[in-house]
Length: 219
Image 1 (cartoon, rainbow, N blue to C red):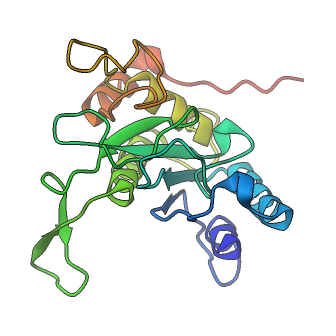
Image 2: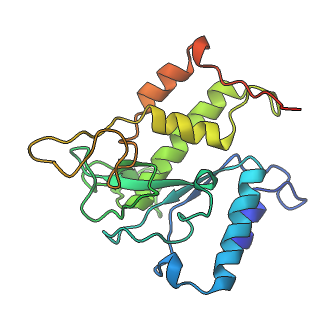
C-alpha cells in the first residue's frame, strides 16, 4: 500500500505525471499504537516523502465512532496529511465517524446526501456514505484551489500542501455549541476539527488578491 502511495507521488517512467492530490478513502482497522514498529516506519517514510514531493495527502478518518488514530490518517507530523471526519445531514459530526485531536475538518458522510455514479454504471447514481465519501469532497475542493491558483508548475506563489490544509481549516464552517450540541467548542474541537468543509468560502477568499500566499526563501 505504501509503495502505491509513493508511486503516485513520484515522477517515474511508469508514472510520467505524478499526482497533485492523493485521496485515501481507506483506513487500517488496527489503531496505530497497536501496529508493529516496522509498520510505523513504512507509513512515516511514505507520508514524509509524499509531503516532500508537494503532493496533498487527503485521508478518511474511519467509521469506527471512536477517537483512536489509524494509518494512513495518522501521521507523525500534522501537516503531512489532511485527516477528514464525516458530517451528518445537519452538518454535525456523524455518529459513526471517528474523531480525535488530529482531525482537520469534517465533510459529508451521510447516505441521505451523498450520491455518485455506481461502480458498474456510467449513467446511474447510487448512494455513497462514510468518511470514504467525506474525504473525496475535501480532495475535490483542494483540486479546485490548485486549478485556480497554480497556473504554472513550480512558481513561487503556487499553493503547497500545508497552504491547502491551512486554508481549508481557516475557512471551514465552525460548528459552535448550542443547547442541543453542547459537546462542541468554539474554534477547534476533537469532534469536528476546524469545522465543516466550506468550498464556497475558501474559493471566495482565495480569489481575493489580498489573500495571495507568497513563499519567501530564507537564506
